[in-house]
Image 1 (cartoon, rainbow, N blue to C red):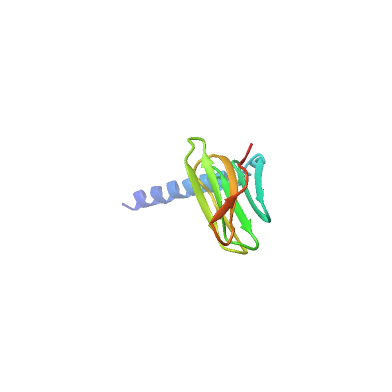
Image 2 (cartoon, one colour):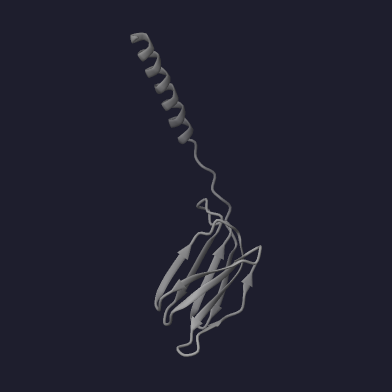
Length: 120
């Protein structure tokens, strides 16, 4: 029984050493992605399909003076929205590549007005 415990401990130490050595190998930097920007008034939205943090994509929006939303679509044409309050920034990391993006700003009366779509 004692020999079995010694062997287990030795195997565990070897495994730990292998994991530690593997972790010490420097990771390769992800290539820089192409950031696409969309503007409407003073509001702004961006997306990047290679954000470098392991996510499939990254979507960001900012509206300094009015509530707004970022609308973005995947390559299947499905549309998503990221809502922003006045003076707020918001981000999300979708699990898919983004095809195009636009920013829509609340006009105070009739609803939201959107800028043009932007894509790569």
